Image (cartoon, rainbow, N blue to C red; front, side, top):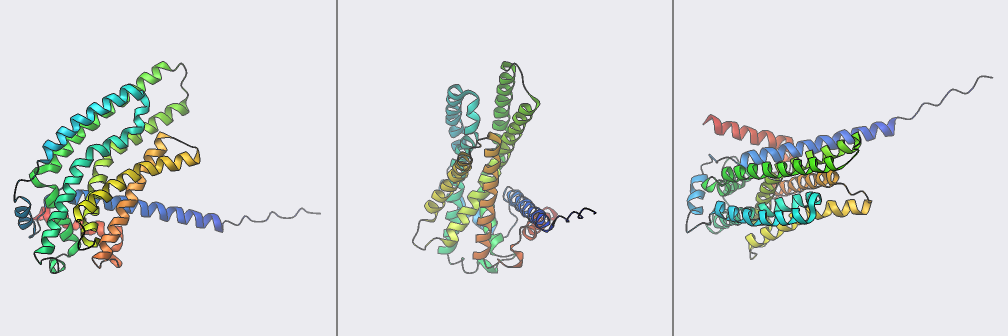
Length: 318
């Protein structure tokens, strides 16, 4: 008697899981590309007709020197980082995202205050109702306000240079520490070495991406607070408080999640840290689009990325 033929494996659930995984990765990559396009757009001077008017309003009075504040804060933070390194040795890498966010906190708070100030003046001056009539729409006007606030006195360019120097210094310290740890170990397996290199690459990614993520997050929080907070609320205070809360949550939640799972890894914590911040940017961007009445077909990140790149090409052409 012949044996029964093997039953074919039902691959439908596996196919669905594969499709969902591809869709999730595609959506995540689209949001990362959108955040990158937003950062590139915000870090360049605006050619919008509204920009000179906003720049004159921002220069009224005695604006705070953002570069001087950042340099003074950097020196203070360097002393703190040196003390932490002497106390924690190689474990100081766990505090890397926190130290970077502390460094970006002062200039992001100043930018939030400037964006809130410009948007409040537009509202008080009666231009808030007509802002949607200015081409190419209210969202691009909000981005123009953020560009003017960020690029005053070439602050973005100077801070980018300062961040590169900081990243080079931190990476040098981490490499020297890794070499010292490896020299003290008698035997190092290939798996442990690969895990150490992966953690180092993720630490480098945190140092590269934290500045752009914090800047974009600060601008989106400022615009969201200015458009959604109550009429009698202090928009700048609400936005700064919300920004600091989101920054703290993006650092604490990955550590808490890994602690509950019992798998605490530096690389996993850094990866979740970056992923959570990308999700926050995507959520705030969707809120801004819905408030502006553009939450329909153009709400997709790919479409807005193309619009931002087209706007940048138009700027270069002129």
